[in-house]
Amino acid sequence: MTDVVDSDELLRRIRRGRAFAEQQRGAWRSRGAALAAEDPDAARDAAARGLAYEVVLKVLDEILTPGRHAEVG
Image (cartoon, rainbow, N blue to C red):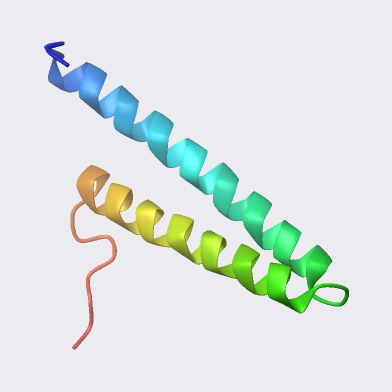
């Protein structure tokens, strides 16, 4: 990939990726809640996928707003 993009386009792409990750996190959480009673294994898988999207959101938030998720310790 040799496309050269300016900072505004990069920011748009990051925001688009963050919006997608947020949508997916919600979808996997909902799916996990719906599966909790009938299929615990699938519910666990959905929870893990939701957690993965949560991590992606934190990383993208840190890029967009440095210090937003500062670790306490």
